[in-house]
Length: 425
Image 1: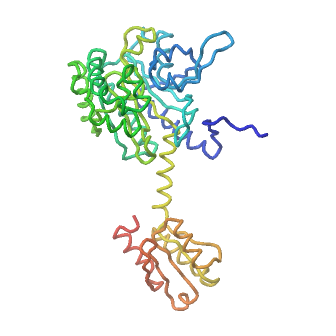
Image 2: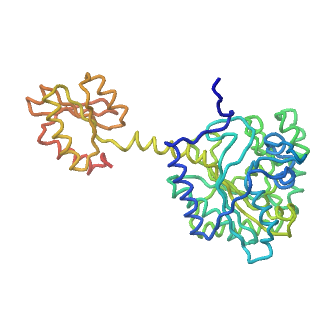
Image 3: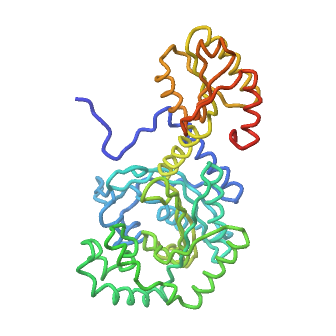
């Protein structure tokens, strides 16, 4: 029996590899512009790192990690995300003792046991950046700007930046109590997971994707109501820097992210075209994580982007471009002599700037019109033996279905006029 890859694991085949390389090379180029250098950490870490770093009450630690006991009796885990291991490397190699800030990026595979879906596999790849030793709101804005510049450089535009503050150990306990007071009378309406989260990690209720929980979250208290003065000043500072850099954003008071280590700034970049799970890049500040892992108090901020999700979004964009913009006129010939004459008309159109393709097989008019529709062309140019003898061509609008005859000698001027009126743009 043929041995197949495990469910949720994906082969990157030769026809896919160039797009992966393109994204990774763009990530490295953009990081160099911002002064980041690459770090490569093991895919296998001691399980304790993720208990302490990611959070014992997160879905990742409770349900999704690939954890096993090695031959030495130690519990080890395939990394489910990149930040905890990068922080461990920063602490273990004592980079906190040198010049700050330290600006690192990484690219590599991560592992989570979850239901495979579009853009999300059990082995997936992330590009991420981390900044250690900078508490200034300018660092938050710079990390966000790098993420947006990277996405634009690979060809994703028109994305939405969502922003929130998730507070700090001073103000978050107050918010936690307000959330519990709001949700306790409603707990019978919560999904099973959220009923468990209510006492242990109530902020996670805001991140539930189930419809009933989303509807209840709409009226939940907002953390902006209880931010301490220091968090409020930091949040206002981040917004001022983003405004100065002409970076548009939307405040999303329900944005909490899925990891316990976030403090203050949390952000996501959303591409709605790839479905309900539309986040292509997300991150935030984690001022207590270095200390939690065993280092000195050190502020930090970063983001991660799933490469599979980026590739899915790029494919949608490129398919749309092929369908809607690559072809202006599709040439159809009916008969041998008409096919010869069409060759001349196609060249003259192309020399006028028209994106024109044609059928090369002697199929029926119906079959060739179907091919014209599949090409995404706006117009079909039809030349049969009768039209050829009369010196005319038929132009059919493939969107509207109307058509008209045009003297062949006027074809180039027709295209020039069409372009001037925006039809060829």
